[in-house]
Length: 228
Ligand code: APR
Image 1: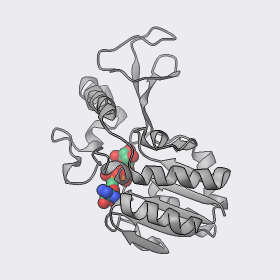
Image 2: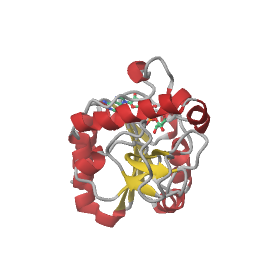
Image 3: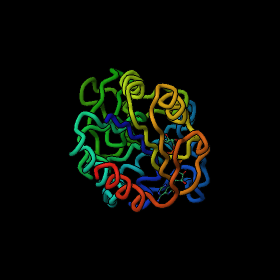
Image 4: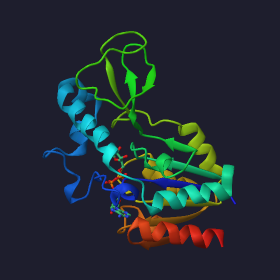
């Protein structure tokens, strides 16, 4: 059985990583759309760096939860028949034990050089404008996909969605495309679709089955059922 799992901010919420669109999803009164665009970065680079530098630093004080670990267990059983796609820029899937994760919106712990387009693993700050380790230009930006930019790995994602038997969406509001459209694409190609989310998402009615509750309860239970 080929399974594609899509995760969003909700899977990391119980680890203490704030989501984007829930009540406390605001950052200093800014909506995410105000700090996560190329235009915002061009207009207010210091503000945008501060937002991502804080989020990168905060990763040091959070731990993966039972939902991340359950998906790692699923990978251990299904191997290459599982594709885990995350919209999250945190590294909690990897730290929970998953080895094959597609970060379609990039990663906090990566920097992208606006000068030479190379990317580097990065754990420090970027707001103080460190030089690029390769070209020396002080144009490193967070290696994250902003609104209006192309998500990573879309070819691979479409290929996997096209041959999936099961598509499962976990902890995502379904507010942001293209990920919000994966359920329709997978269903059109014949996959069964399941939503696991705290509450009904924007696209809940598009799924064959929906279960609502916290990810740390729903995901381990769902993995148990699947592997039974
Ligand atoms: N368990 C399961 N789901 C949860 C939990 C939890 N403990 N807590 C919150 N949720 C759900 C919320 O109900 C909401 O539907 O997680 C979802 C989080 O939604 P968003 O904050 O919109 O996050 P996400 O869907 O990942 O956002 C998509 O938008 O801002 C951009 O690039 C950013 O990757 C992000 C994308």
